[in-house]
Image 1: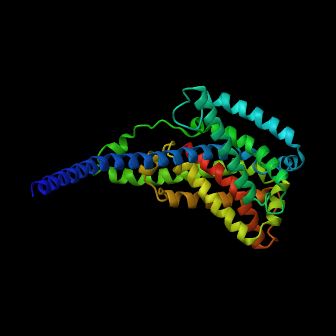
Image 2: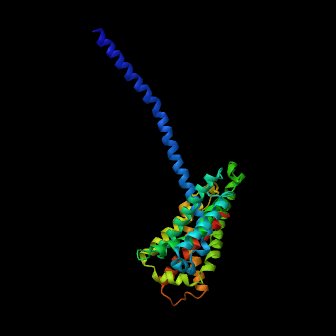
Image 3: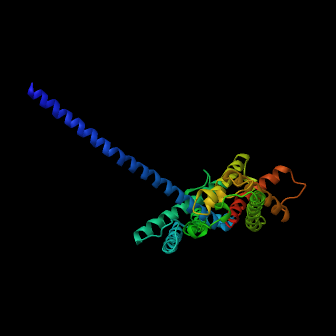
Length: 324
């Protein structure tokens, strides 16, 4: 009888101890899971920021037929040499820049960040080549690697410079901090139109700057001739995602200030769509300016050319909106 009581007491003590231990471990486990989730969220934001810088820096070689052809026949030894030289250049850049907010403290961290930079740049280049149908199932492995390496060099350099390309110091806005007065209602209406017009002008100038240099080339004709209706939809979706990622998703630009601005299209979705429509109009204007399109051409040809040119134009428009 006494032995059973002692056994029950011991058993109860063990159950109590296990309950207390599990209660102590649960908050620590929740904290680890919370930190783990936040770590992945920060990592994804930094990768998006690096990719945004890569797209901004890689615009000049985005529609360059010569780069595609060179990558088709370059020997593997030369590709390895080019990768090694690019690795050293990006490593030196990461000593002072980099796509992460904090610079690398040790050489090991700099090497790891350089590998990540090259991976992001090459991945962005591969995605662009697939979207433009320059890499497909019929493309050989050596040709695909050559195109990715040559196109990925400016993308990788852009990833390394993304912190300086996209970062912006927040500026104090006295109009937003002060409470609205009775006489400030009319002033707020003027601010709404001012912000809207500023974004439209910035998107137009950025898109015009990029489209003006690409519209007279033969790459637009070649890509427009080979693109089907389904691929045109994919290009439109990619253009919207890239533009939104550059301006909003990276969150190391003036992201919070843009969300606080008042305007007709001052939401991320509305601003991205309107800016893309502006890029399409700029693309159409440039194609007509360089006599690539005439008023006698069918409407679907105008639409096809505008979508093809709208991809780099919307990246330029996003760069222009970053300046306002």
